[in-house]
Image (cartoon, rainbow, N blue to C red; front, top):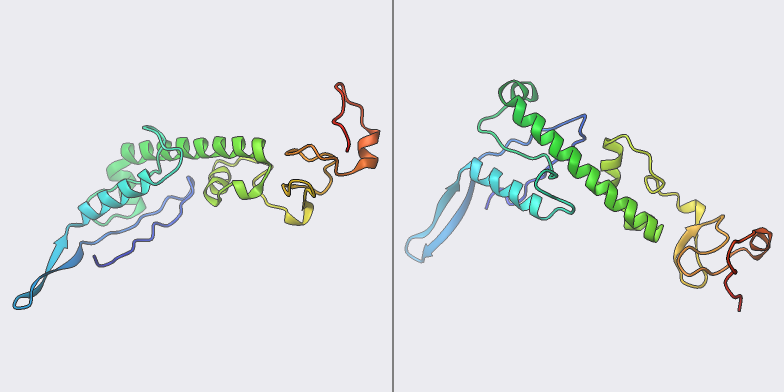
Length: 187
């Protein structure tokens, strides 16, 4: 099919975008005598397929939490789209916001469990920024991190005990701490 690739631009809630899709062509080979014939696929079929394929490949989607993609017939500007399809436009913005909230919740859960910046996707970071949220995982600070010598988990440079394996990383600081339960055994 030509074009063989469609680039869907990333958009923030505050800055929606439009992707215009024309009909597409693919050639069907018949035989040596007749060669190939062009088959044209209407733009609305391509748009429907792109939206379906993108949504089904996304994480954390639900009935009312999906990427805010929809299609309308004809080439429109954002202003015209808002005037002609305002309620649908608003509905899909809500769907997008719900989806972003779900992505951020997943990122929060992953961060709580792993404390690894690599566990958070760029899409999750973009969702948090779009929702104007501040999260500890939002900005990666590799210069302020190190690896635990025991389990190789990425930990904050100031960490006293590894969150993953509980290895004591800074014995001097550890001795200054007071715990309500017995400390782990030091081998």
